[in-house]
Length: 395
Image (cartoon, rainbow, N blue to C red; front, side, top):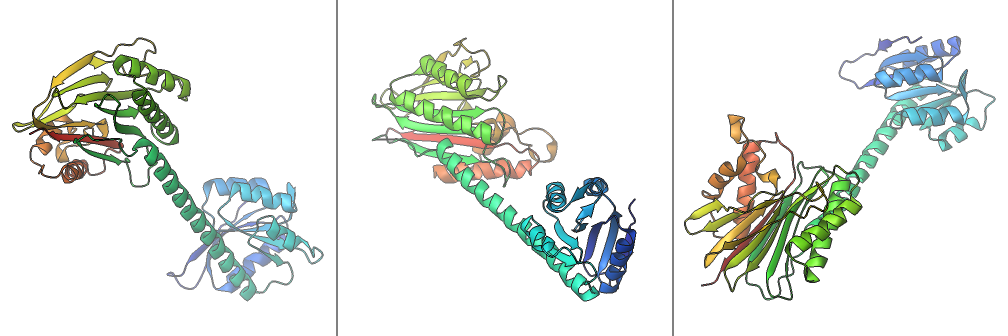
């Protein structure tokens, strides 16, 4: 049985929500009277067993638990351990008897914030103990949250280094600009990845990919695929053979059979003025020329992991202008909303933004493009995005 009670002098003071777990009715009444004399604003809920405490904690916000150590269904430090498991972020103050000399120290060692000895509690002591216990538990929780944020930031940084490594360009004169953004400010990185290397053949090779899903598993698989791509390209693998080996890596490492990845492979030959493109479930690149930017027609192939072993990745050879740029991106850039219309930005909306965005500096151009797309979306669609912009001038 629970008995909610409220008291306090000033409406603007902090409200303390207290759960008293005490099976002795006389002791429970005494604690209630002491709380009334503290002058604190409080809401008191009384339970006589650990089972009642469990039910209360499941449905009612609580700041502090006053816990007797001799309950019908739990006793001693076992009671504290059980309560800490139920409410790891709540303050716990143990109520001990006069004969339990070591109980208080053992209780704090078991996770309680403080302890009070029955029969020696005065209103001022209860007031200080309650306020300090709640303050301490909140401080500990804030510190834990800060630690979690720091560890997440470090994890993101490690994964980002794996998803977006420095390009290996050698003597290439192609200007490479890459960007990655998670879907939300505090989100873990997703599975978008990209890379650029110049192989021993002197050609520039690039990949942009997107692993299905979000979070650690997708990011880790993205890192593996990106690293596998770089190693295989430097080892001389190209085109369909390269995609087949990447798919084998994905199938071996993925967490479930439903996980897949899309990718665009590109090999740019500046001397011949061509780019060979393979699409594995990905959308077409965008080609910028003096006349404007357009989506290029490229043959489509199956996403990696959908039908392993099918090896359906036809190539397309694109003629390139003397000066221009190719943009390869993941769908996080186009799937956001297009302002207040309710429609998605899509490729047409993206092209409209590109053709009205200054292009003198590639980095500034890509940053402005992403910012405009995000402003139109206004946070309504949260997917990570990766953009790779390759610019050349053979004049």
